[in-house]
Length: 428
RNA sequence: GUGGGCGUAGCUCAGUUAGGUAGAGCGCUAGAUUGUGGCUCUAGUGGCCGUGGGUUCGAUCCCCAUCGCUCACCCCA
Image 1: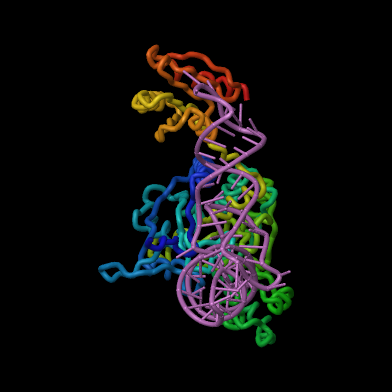
Image 2: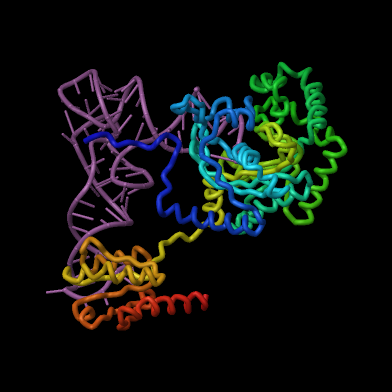
């Protein structure tokens, strides 16, 4: 026998049982995005490698070591998207969306690809949904963005196990000032820092703040705070964001050490983490990126966005508020006697056309086996068809919950089932 | 890329104290009930014990390699 072909490392199959959870989550996402007036955008799965190099940043981990890049037949270097902000911005610029409206509120959902070592809640193909609001420089836009994700958490019933961490890196002037202040503070202790942090001292000193090396943490405790270096405009922006979050009663933790890994952030940055997860506890991350549109060749347009990992979010849901994903079927047709089997397709087709979820056995199994199958599929009704019933154009319609059974004509079956089901849902 | 743990039935796992070619529960199939599911009872199906090599009369067990899974580091969703 030939070897079984195995799936690629770090990816997974979403089987029907799990897919039902995904469908519920996706329905929640779509509903909330509609309420917040965000429109869906579906950029391609792959882009020119250059887009991510310029958009995400050459020095980031994502670009320097995690991308799935390849050459196509024409010799272009292409890359499976490792995140989608760069793709959305590219699309915004290329399609002149600014001309349609000065503010574009967009959302997306789809698979992303990063070649990292897999672990719990981190996969090489993973799904993100996210939102980007391009056009407004104002703090109310920041707050709406955060409220948007918070609303999704609320719908899922998991706000209690989630923490919002927030910080500001300010505008370019503030960040430059802070960079020097931080370097001045760290310089005398340079040799005490971890190897990676020493390497970052010149290239990206802010990242030393979120280092997990014990010696770095010790030093960083007394380092100057970004907040203290914000210029007036940046400080005002941030204060207003926090004040509006209080108005909306969205709890947050001000985190002076929060510095996100991507190069493009300015002003507000935030992260939602969950205590229901292991080491990979971030379920949503985002922030303002006022310079990215310009850097990718567009006009000088401010923007803010976030992205959330679906696999991780579902892990939290499963731990905190599991969904009921038992299968449900309106009607199962049980046929007795092989001569009648050929009548089944037309009957179930008609009932399906009339709006029932309906199934029938195609293995010519015994009645007992068909009844068991109906039970397995969560059938709420079973229609039993034998010789006598067929000659009279009727079925025995059995309510699978109560066990009650009545004789119903073929063309009345769907109506009877639908009436009964709608009565039941009104009661509950 | 670095380190730890683990690969035995579709799933969760036991087991070989010290090497003699394997078990349970769940699931699946069927019967008890020849036209009535769920509960119960009974029986059955199902495994080159991840793969390759070595030691041995003999390896699922010991040794080596390899692949895979998993957790953590780095970083991130």
